[in-house]
Each structure stands twice: as structure tokens, then as C-alpha cells.
Amino acid sequence: MQTTTTYTIIDCPECNVLFAITDQFAERRRADGNSFYCPSGHSMSYGDSLKDQLRRAKDANARLTSRLDQVKADRDQTELRRRAAVGQATKIRKRIANGVCPCCNRSFADLARHMQSKHPEYAANSKAVSPNIGTAA
Image (tube, rainbow, N blue to C red):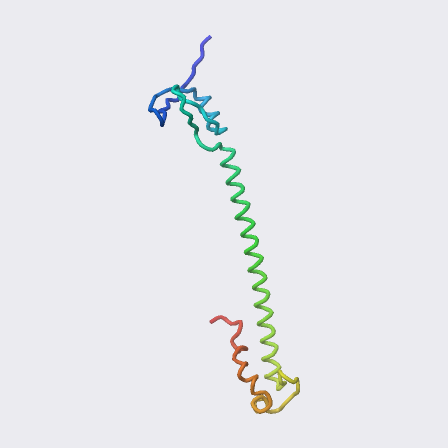
């Protein structure tokens, strides 16, 4: 019967002693992240196990995906509000263009004169409703 075993040579980071461990043992320690010791008794490890690294990567991915979904939902809500505001501004502009007073809802042949004489405070605030609202600049 003949067996072949391969070894990995390790240099202890604490005392610089060279020692060997089997490749199978090294692979198990890489997979589980557990510590092992040099002949002088110094503890060492390969770091986090592959399972831990994968779990952390999945958790980070889940957090990013959740955040992305929230940002998309916020964007959609903002777009709906913008469209509603544009619709309201368009509705008001059309009513004014048809001679309907936006303050008292009465029709006038000369709406501009009516607005200046009866509702001067509205003229000062009318700059907030621009005819270019909702159009690309």
C-alpha cells in the first residue's frame, strides 16, 4: 500500500518558524476559518471562513437591493407629484385663457383688466405659475 500526502509550508508570522501542514488540513482551515498553531504555540488563521464571507456579501447585497427599491419608489412618488402639479398648472392656465377668473370663477371678456383691478395680490403671486412649467429647459 502506498499513500501520497502533500504539504503546505507555512512561516509563523510571530516567530518565523517554518512548519508544514497537510493540504487537506489547510483547506479545512480556509473553509471554516478556525485557528491553528505553529510548533511554538502561536495561534494563526486564514481569516474569515468562506461561508462567513459569502454570508456578509449576501447581506450587503440584500441591503443594497432594499435601498435601491426604496429609491425607485421615492422617485416614482416624486414623478407622480410633479405630473399632478403640471396638470393643475395647465388646468389653471387654460381656464385663464378662456377668460375665467382663478379667484372668483366668474367669466370676463377682459380678464387682464379684471385681475389688475379686483385681484392685484394674485398678479403678484402669479409668477409661481409659469406657462413653461413641466417643459424641458
